[in-house]
Image (tube, protein in one colour):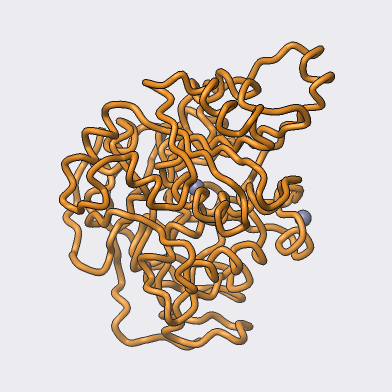
Amino acid sequence: MHEIKSIPKTQFAWITHQPGKLRLREIDVANPGKGEILIKIEYSGLCHTDIHIIEGDCSMPQGAYPLISGHEGVGRVVKIGDDVHDIEMGDPVGIHILYSCDYCFTKNIASCLKAKFVGVHVGGAHQQYAIAEAKYIARIPKELPLALAAPVMCGGLTSYSALKDLDVLPGQWVAISGAGGGLGHLGVQYAKALGYRVIAVDGGEMKRKVLTRLKDPLLSSFFKFVLSLGADHFIDYKTDDHITQVRNLSTGGVQALIVFSSHASAYEHVFEYLRPRGTVVVAGVPPDGTMQIDVFTYATSAFTTKGILVGTATYLNEALDYVVRGIVKPYYHLLPFSKLPQAIDALKMSKVTGRIVLDLTQEKPVSQARL
Ligand SMILES: [Zn+2]
Ligand SMILES: [Zn+2]
């Protein structure tokens, strides 16, 4: 086993002891077993799904708690277990969100019956040192700053995966709902990179107000922010007649609507955006979200619906490569590791544009209680 000398005996981890009981605790740093590595986490994104896992308001496996959430962890290899090859100490790596069998990992990860989620079945990245199975490691290109890589691990991968498998040709119309959020702002950019015409749908006064307080003139309004990502049009679903506008802009409805929003209201009118033979892609997962349509309209319009569960290792490498080449730019807010509860509150109140990324490089967190 190889290791660096400075690994402490203990570390801080955000532990959800039971649904809604999140605490920062000092725990032992684990030793990597056979086929495993120890990663010193440097940046760790906060996904909306983390909140559902922490609060337990989604379907969770029996015996899931206590758990360590976080599935957008990136850092450096500090200890290597036996039988691990081709990984060097200090390598920049990320942990793939889903462990699966070898076939599904590169071919069709959502179909795997043996899948295990990082941050649910396997300890996640809301801790300073995480163990990972070496074969589920994503190599982060050395020229990519690690903070930029974190939002790609789930947000980028899921949004890229949702767009990559669409039956839509370059030049055709894709609407993206929740366009300013952690997944959506990346989805807009991947959609443009793949050659689609993009209508970004998002909005509401709270986001607009939060954004107008930012100093960057590029971000003086949410409208400008979303267009700066490359969207052809921006529709504010709270103030505009959004369905008519989307249908007019796309001359009769979009070929595909990707819903990244985590609010149930985003699913209320999804089929009305579509032209015949259009597809709704479900990526945002509000626990109380439902879609309704009469079966006659569904059949005669030849609509399709599609669920998205992250993406394969191959797609993750492709999604990272777009960021390396500067074609896609994750937009993130760095918060200290100890501020996870505040980050959760901000995300729940829809105050976040882009992604919140916890910074584990700066401070030694102080133990504190939550809820
Ligand atoms: Zn996620
Ligand atoms: Zn499988």
